[in-house]
Image 1 (cartoon, rainbow, N blue to C red):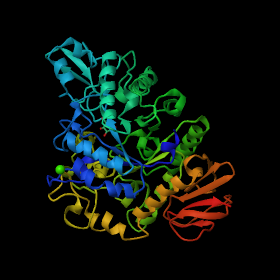
Image 2: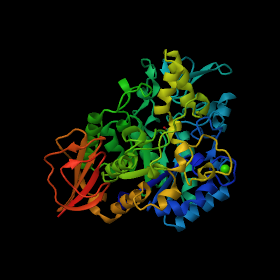
Image 3: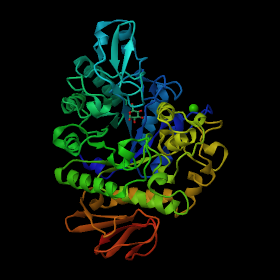
Image 4: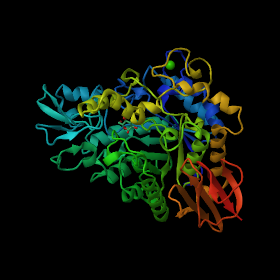
Length: 536
Ligand code: GLC
Ligand code: CA
């Protein structure tokens, strides 16, 4: 049963920016349908699509006002059913995105709560007084006052995203019904948004600070997840929980099969190695030692304990990885392939975020008007308040904003990058004439074709899908190396994270090169070189 996802790769679609079928500049479900063959050609088994349910779109769909209906901006229920059926006939399954920590403030439940309906007030977290000075994830206070009720409510994200009260069993029943509804429609798995924030601390009178810090991995989180999964019968499906700032111990608990929680989870520590003092909006070059330490510790301990990771560099909340740990210029292709090799040979289920397989880069927006994301816009003002100049604030956004990964998918070198007939809702990256599916399809050596090989290798070699992992000392902190072993098979992966030739020592392996981004193999690793060698 587990093998189903151990040898599989997941493709992530950010629906708003993937493909627009009706020329309104916004990606949609029929756009996804028109590209299913392309997705199949990558070799992936599952497609996670970000929320397209009814929503006022304050947080681009992560503020759901109706879990069972489709936002007309994205299509109809019929389009959705066809999309599921067509993927099915191509041997792929959809994972839908369940946002269960909070709803939109426009959700009927919250609207009833606001009108003073006590039953629905219990669906959310209201208090007579503000218990603490917590800050919300997109800036500002996490507690907001409702004058009509003379009460405060908790929202870990935007004020338009009130947190649900998981202490109320009725909330569980409502949400389980949502899962059953989509399961009955033929969905093959689920991604659960910020799942480790659902259980709030008993005592909300905590010191001031970031609200998520006090709510992560809360006292009843494992119990809640197990109930959600077992009562809806989704234990056998692929499920992934987004676990903000979780610990290794909790990650293991969330994903050990005998616990009946998630098949895997996302954690983000590896993407914070360039956050100065842990602050996303304070710049610092990535700390490679931290990066390597994270992977070696988490990969090895997850492996030893029987937990399972989702492994990834990119998603709709993260700047593009080539711009971050690679090189957009001279070594664009080499660095994109190296980063891909590193992740796809790890133990875990790899996720590819739309455009990553092309080596798409950050947006390089130069004015605030180009940004769309609530977080980017709020933080611009916070950065100015902190004393930054306009250009400093814009520089931080150009490296850290989520909009960097939300520019439209680059399909062709033609009009609007082949994304839409009309101007898109967010700017298209100017490099689309060079970086696009059409161009890369016709180049055997492209990043796109390299990703296809990586996905295939996981299906072909059990040492990749099932082997255990150990990190190796390459004698050079810029060169990461690890071995995967299964029975008497041994695969050694060596990745140079620097833009220079790097000497390595102590890694002894002879055999067949399964994949690499330069030809030949030697003791000097060239700029961003990656190699995976099967011993023997
Ligand atoms: C998750 C989503 C992100 C969203 C947030 C609040 O982190 O990935 O896009 O803003 O949850 O729902
Ligand atoms: Ca559209």
